[in-house]
Length: 116
Image (cartoon, rainbow, N blue to C red; front, side):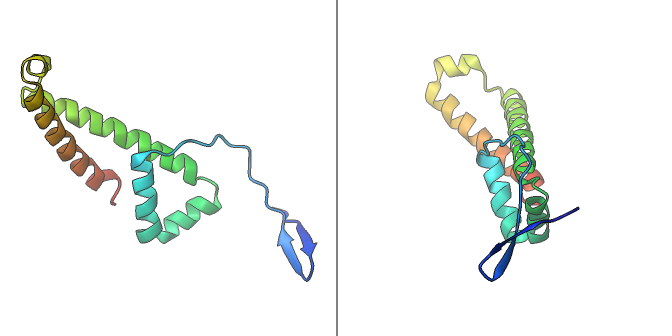
């Protein structure tokens, strides 16, 4: 790898050029993972940042965790018999139960994929 420099006054600054890679929007779970690795896994964070892989890594985590949370929500809702009939007949109870399921599913998945 050949690195070139530009002189600015008394300093030589490296000519850094980023590859033209697709940049992804990072959502909730990617941002949670970013915060965790910045504070607890500094070597991983620096490695991903220096290799220009951080954005893709966070995007992949974001999609994976969102899929897992949605799968677990669906599974728990079926197991607890929370269905469309309840949604039509008892809306507030359905909302309460679905919020409870979502919170439990997120807690489980976050421990497995974000905070490791």
